[in-house]
Length: 451
Ligand SMILES: Cc1ncc(COP(=O)(O)O)c(C=O)c1O
Image 1 (cartoon, rainbow, N blue to C red):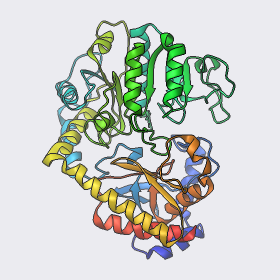
Image 2 (image 1 turned 90 degrees about the vertical axis):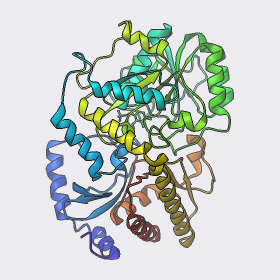
Image 3 (image 1 turned 60 degrees about the vertical axis):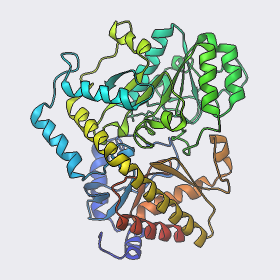
């Protein structure tokens, strides 16, 4: 149906005439408890329509009925080259023939050494790196490293940030009562099955609030091992840090002898080669990278100060994993970075152009259909919402935005063949063609007309 006029396609989708997808969805439901990752914005009332993807063509995903979807999800972040870049894929094929698997606890592999050397050159905080598989694991490691290094108990984290799905950092809300210390407390949105004890191991406060951070560190700094944050709050509305906030965080951590970690799982390699830390000129002690590090295969790393990372060399802190530094993913990351560096960062210039066109086009559609739309985000991705605000700094700022409209619009986009992320995030690949963008803007306009 990729060739059908787009209005016809909307009509077909609206009439739920999608037997292929529906049949596959039934088969899926019989053997799997839902999608293999729960919806990112946990327990939101409205889920996207059931689509079953079969293959890709460039930046288009094709479902079992032949419908094409322009891909602004990019594998939830990793697929910086989409699915079909021959040069990137060629490097992975070559590595399969050379060495597919070795065993992370057995020996170093040449390509992991080369990649580690490269990362220490391009990421400001990276004096050493340790590889693992997923962002969740890397966030777990960073917490263990900080506690092991400092001998202190708490990790301080922030409302609206996400650091993976493992128990110690997954759940909780900011304390409603003013009891102390401000440990996370259970929230109605939390998963069942999380031990009560895990809430007590992290402090949870609001982000972009310098005063609250200052007071918390003054009161509890002696017990805080790590301040852990996304430097841009990508998981809630792609909120930017307020002017000077990150610099103040850095100074306060130094003052109180607390390690600072930027979780760059989303910002890494999307905003630029050095991540958000290079963008804002603030260097943390530790950082976590995953998603776009490899450009598509599962790979993550913790990067940081030698003094802290050495806890792993001496075996004071342990981190193990069969697939850590998996040669295929390492080769993919090497190829990814080589291509990103090429021609003085031509890839990033292309992303800037595409993103500007896309954002301008969405705003133009919003004006045509008399909608107030906010778009915000750095290079590589942006958040879209229906609100009169011109910037959102915290989840509190979302209270006056129209959640229902945002969710309906996302469903309409999916029906129109534009896939965006769970929390209304567009991820922008430099592989999008001009035709993809033209097409996406037509579809976005028509979805807006349906609101
Ligand atoms: C900022 C951040 N940290 C950590 C994670 C967890 O990474 P993974 O899904 O690879 O475990 C995510 C995932 O979306 C993330 O956005």
